[in-house]
Image (tube, rainbow, N blue to C red; front, side, top):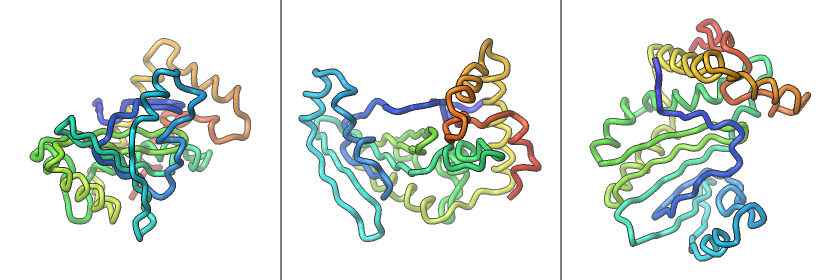
Length: 222
């Protein structure tokens, strides 16, 4: 079983940043993760990026929002970024931040299926987990952007995934581990490198988890 929902992006510090017509991030968003560090980008990109105008404000519930409007495209992008990742895990039970990223698509309190209403509105979505954060993003026609906010707000309110969903996603993540790190030649090299580079820091394990058995069913009960 495979799943392209979450491409493994280990050790991500920078991502391609699309021109957003509207975007939302959570209260823990670090400004550097949106506006970048000028020293780390090319002069051409820095000049272009400096021209992007955005509005920043905080909602009464503490959610920090950054909005950029681009009327040259009919599409909108919504990013919801949570300040939680593999670094927050128990060293004896790793891989759960990534597993919960998958479970976030298993239904919420008022919306049993996340993908169906999004696809009906012409949108698509994906997500990724790093050691430092988890990011969920949606691309959708701008006229239907309220659908994206509705979906994200409901699963932020309360997840409602089932035992079956948990079992399915556990198997998906386990297969992902085997595909990328057990069956691929030198697939475990970054696991070894992390352990050599970090002795006490939570970066010493990969986002996928330290090993395959940690995701077995007896460790993932509801």
